[in-house]
Length: 424
Image (cartoon, rainbow, N blue to C red; front, side, top):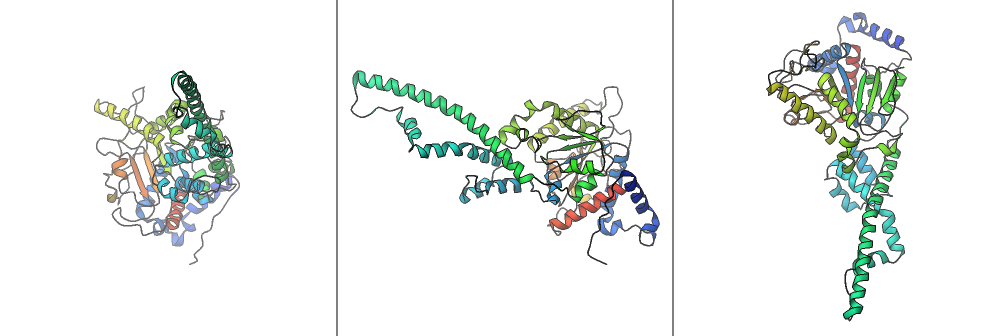
């Protein structure tokens, strides 16, 4: 009757359980009939129920991207890079902005890093009247009118100068790149600083999961989990006896030096953080990942997923299936089978909750599934690019139709979906 949403926030796990138990009681709904389908439709209601079954059986894990923090006022990845490029202290012209936006996201970050690192050097050259540039250009040549021994001596001197300048330039490139990475990280910290987490964070923190992976630098989910009185530690920075943990794949705002954003940082990821990739690989093989606010465009995750995909295909081609070392079925990697989703191009079968081998519940072209992606809108080509990820759009439209719901309306539907998932 009223165009208003009401959120009940409780202060303890006991109060939360009591509130949820009351909401599950038939008397709490209109005339004893649940009204979820009126808001979500049968497809999303069934998906929430099945994901809840995975969570209850400890087979569900979360994978959070930048989209989760948009509700808290933070930008998504492209918005972050655009905001950084438009800052007055970043040397990017308006004409360059359009070209910059056409690059891949890591390459956009690399350009910003390069410009930020070179800025002091350019200012230094201007202050000296371009002397540095003069030396670099004039050193290889001979002044007019010089011949014989004097020219040979001058040529030798110029050659030595050129080598010295080239060496200094190579060294300065490394220094300027390090300076650029440091300054870019500092700007990222400024742009992503927020003290308040979103409703999505709070709903996700209420789920009975023990493992969370995130590419986000912000600490908003951690704050939400603390608000839910969860005992956890943050990998790779903390160790302890807590059963719950959050893995920060791309660094943390509290440690700017660890932020991974540029192409070079992405390329060096596997060498520097191989152990973290190993954890994600294990989760892809033993858990059903619920991707929220994540576009699946992260190159490091794509590489990790490709490694797991190849391993599973090798197992399947050998006729053995994906099993654990002891010979039993790998737990928890099961598919979400939801009726009425033929538009995704997937063949769907019912969802077994326990004791399933990898991919036994959801198969396409002989492959299994890594998890479920909750997206705002339909992703028509996702089935081609990621056949092992199930897409559950919030816009409630067929994949062949244009977007008919706004981002804000889809985001609200996502929160309602997460609420039902937590309730179930």
